[in-house]
Image (cartoon, rainbow, N blue to C red; front, side, top):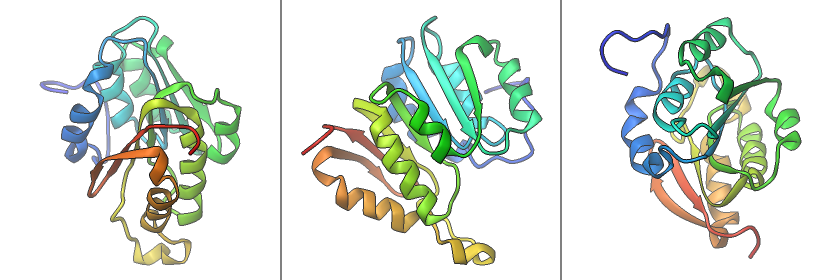
Length: 186
């Protein structure tokens, strides 16, 4: 997003991650890919994926968010790709089981930061990713002293890395964790 952006954002937690998105998702450009974003907020990642990855007429993006903001809907409309983007309001634990298993090329887990919620999103997201699909977790190192009782993403992501080790390839491990799904079952 260079020059005058048509989008309106109040926060930017995404731009620092652009190199990772480019590195791990460039193979999806101009393909009939299916993308899933869990936690869309204002739509920074959503709009980037729309501009960069939805070039093929059959490419689709599903964005799940518990609190769908008006700003997200407005930013999606400004992409000019609204027909390719489906905003799904609701708790991920309720929305994700209704989606088609094994159908997503990319699953971005950036919703709730509570440990149990991240683990649940990971299990459900793994089922939704196709073999060879990429799964990314945001905020591996996130902590919030004001909300410590709910935990943090790190323990859940560490559990996923241990439990799913025979089924995944770790692409990157740092502030974000990126995986490729290698198999459905061991």
